[in-house]
Length: 213
Image (cartoon, rainbow, N blue to C red; front, side):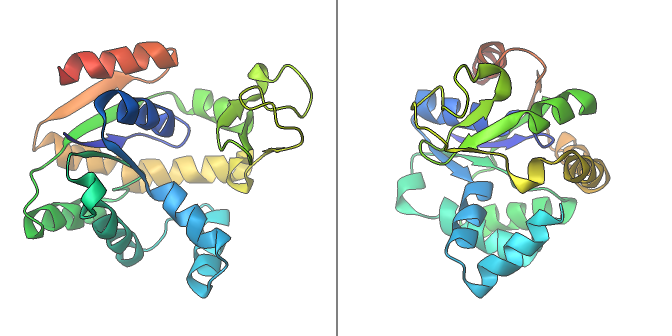
């Protein structure tokens, strides 16, 4: 099964992708994780990517499509995958379609998760990432100060620079201007699952699975 999960920043794409990956036994391809790994390696490309992301801008299509091609054609994706974080523009969607054709892959099912902007801003400004277990934690779930509620590591919770409200609003503006039209592109092709992302995580996941089966 090949899936592409779609939605605005903070809508829960990563969370749902991880759950679906486990339940459906397919690979979770997070372009965000791949980009962050490139930044961590501190190469020239990684530094350029970091500068772009910190400004709330999109990484160039040529870089992204090569990252995606390497991922979806790898052996561990032979049984399927869920692509998270790509495409983000109509041009990327067109490039992705061409990639599927050139690699002999069938078109994936598109999962569209939607939520109101103000809800997303509230979510993103109140989330932290654990440097130990890599889970994303909401401030409301932190019981002990500076202690990860998942792995219990101390002083590992950090706020990402792109989770500042000013950057978030810019990211949402970019989303509405350049990414939302992608759904118009896919709506003409069909094979789209639409889900209400304001619901609890478990309900969102149940709705997706119900549509897939």
